[in-house]
Length: 133
Image (cartoon, rainbow, N blue to C red):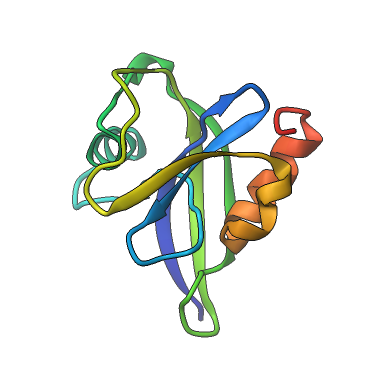
């Protein structure tokens, strides 16, 4: 049986680009988000992780499921999968990298090779929906 890393992610789209973050010491971009802490549901995890990583507050009443995606986990052993529950949501505050985040960037479909395997699946879906240039 495969090990599954269960995560939540925030999909933010503006002007045909999607927000990506890069952790310190990494080259690959990921969607903001992370793993649940004990007792947290998806929305609580999303709110906490986005606040920690980007210093903004998710508006809980605007959180909308985008889909759940699964692929091989980036940089992990063979057979380790990541399952990512993705959400869109409005926010208040100014986006700014914090904690382990070294950089944030607005990525286009042309940046697909710069993101993790599971993120590429999401990029393809965003592109098919004509949300990502």
